[in-house]
Each structure stands twice: as C-alpha cells, then as structure tokens.
Image 1: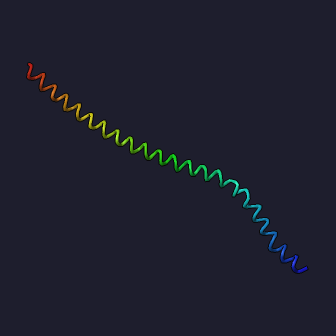
Image 2 (image 1 turned 90 degrees about the horizontal axis):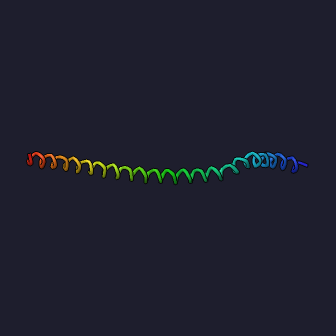
Image 3 (image 1 turned 45 degrees about the vertical axis):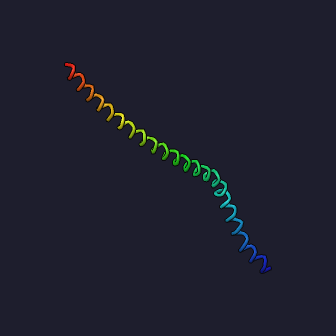
Length: 81
C-alpha cells in the first residue's frame, strides 16, 4: 500500500508536468522556424545595406566626375568666348 502512495506522489506530479509542458513544446517548432527566417532576413538586410553603401560611394564618385566635367566645360566655353 505504501508503494502505491509513493508512486502516486511521484508519478502524478510528473504526469501533470508533462501535460503542462506539452503545449509549450508544440509551439516551439514554429518559433524556431520563425527565428531561422528572421536570421535569414537579417543577413539579407545586411547584404542590402552593404550594397547600398557601395552604390552611395559610386554615386558620390559620379557626382565628383560630373562636377569636374562641368568645370572643364565652363573653361572651354570661356576660352571660346
């Protein structure tokens, strides 16, 4: 009889714990997928940011070339009179 009481005292809380944890564990899989997707999007955003920086640098270089060309054109026009 004592064995049944000990088993009940030990097993019933374990069963209750398993029943309480089960819904949480079933929600973890979609959360893991979402975390992986979020990490992937963060990596893609980092690549896009780096690409934007490169494009910004190129735009600044082109603007400098355009300014230089405009100055040269002004000098040529001034020489022609």
